Length: 277
Image (tube, helix red, strand yellow):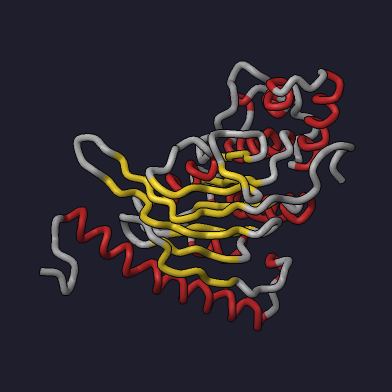
């Protein structure tokens, strides 16, 4: 259970006609008129070809990038920049190398002025939650990649956000560690009821983790479709019929994504798309 005074559950986040254009040597429309609502406490995954604007959309939700048009709402209020109500876990571990595990986990709390005693108590709770008891005084260089990502997850959780934004958080890990951390993030999500938006290139990962999978088109990134993942939880204990449906969902999403990947490849090669003049 959350410590006294901490939020239980997550918030809603909504994209309303969001467009992002990067100007420079080449004008790039990264995200184009995206509208999407994520209900409190739900887990969605966003997937699409490389360069389709997945990470840009996540950064807009985090308040790290300002949209060119449209806006993002958190609990009905416009997002105007970064805030403690949203926490981001990047593919790169982003831990401060000169700080220990517990110092990294309590960093956000320290910035917010939480007393040393209270932040230590909170940090210790989430270190235990991610399975790092006994490593509190270690430095990031002394940890494996999977353990460093656990530190990053604990740091976000300790700051008590309403929405957790995961940008390819397992992309740099080996297959075995990735599988363990997928199960770990589901366990943490089930315990905290936070709202999660998750960007990935792995269709299997998206189907295993999410309530809904949002498929984006090749750039400019639009929403091509949203697939409801009607698999029972926990998903690491699938029976035969559930596993068959799991494979069917993967195939359905792979079909949606495949056409967009081909469009992206043709554009990069300078070839016209089929049917274009």
